[in-house]
Length: 433
Image (cartoon, rainbow, N blue to C red):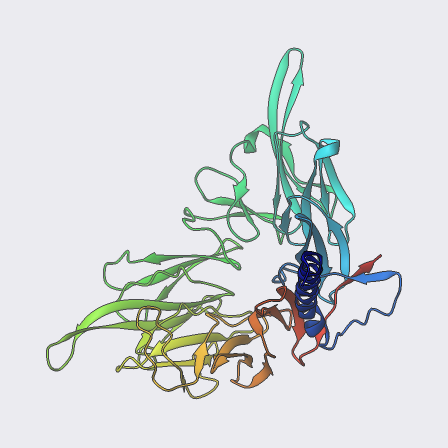
């Protein structure tokens, strides 16, 4: 064969290799797009967007990102997966409001969940504007004249378009967020502003911990005999709940008005050997009651958090170290008999023959959790029923807004992220072209 023929053959082989590589990388998108879409893109004025990761919903919206040529565009979507608006750059988000710097205009806009600008200020207009809960901001501004200067701090409602606490020198350096929907007003830690009720709340003693879901909880052993949880609610009331056993309780895992308390301790068995186990109990902060669950769970492995509906996922082991899981309600009742699972230990990868592993540490906001059965991801409801099984190459990252966050990954293909409903339909995100 002549040198010219050899060159032509090499060029042909190179072209074939490039074509094959293009075909393989293109297959990833085609393979995933075969899933059923809830939103069909039949409108020629709309285009479907791909996202870098499916995110959790916070309040009524979620923020997802599409990156093209190393540039990210953020899309705000509602719970029906409609794209509300988009923006670029960094932002701060809280309770449906977005604080977005506009560098080219040297200002910052605060927009509501529909993208409407509800507050705007120049880079040097305020010393500080802090977005806080329930659609409010803390503003600090310095007022200057040729012969005077003073600094004023106040609380402004974006929804009401007015100050809830008029700017004053009194609050400079004192007003700050103190957990969920509460602003601290004084140095003593006894006076607060409740952003939900829009009223000042006072306590007879200092509140030592920030509020969460309406409560601030600390341990109390003032009589040196019985451990209590001291509970401050967000209306100025204080109560004490006695622990059901003579061990320290902390209350630092309170969520949605419930505490699942875990206390590890060393005990001696009948043979005189020392072993570690846990006391555990649940506290209902609204009712002021506690219940001992130590006889139900030998060693609790996770830190169970209650959902708003009043359910918690418990991962625990028995006396022999075999792992189990179940879901309990506010009274500590099990929704189903504890189920044995495979050993999830990172440092001791034992295999006890069980096919199921627990992926989630808690129930989702809707009462679901993620497991794998022989490596296949599944969504399970609070009653231990499988409601959705992953397809090939799918990883379930969690459940939010009654949908599954999916990560599709296969060697040789582009990774993809998307949402699926609990019937297995892929949810499309469309924007106006």
